[in-house]
Image (tube, rainbow, N blue to C red; front, side, top):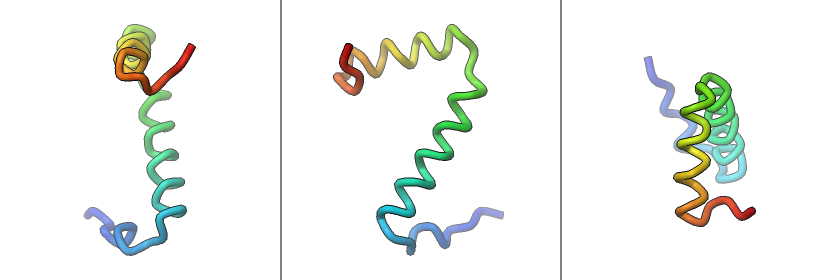
Amino acid sequence: MVDFAHFNSTSEYRRDDLIRNIEHAVQKLTQGELEALYYDMLTKGLIEE
């Protein structure tokens, strides 16, 4: 069951929760998937070299 309580939480707590979830997902990616994600983020200007 999905816990929707986080939608009522503070912005800072929600941001931390999102970062934590993204970190866990990224840790499971293969090298090829990470490279694709990096390139996508780079072309969108989300990462600066």
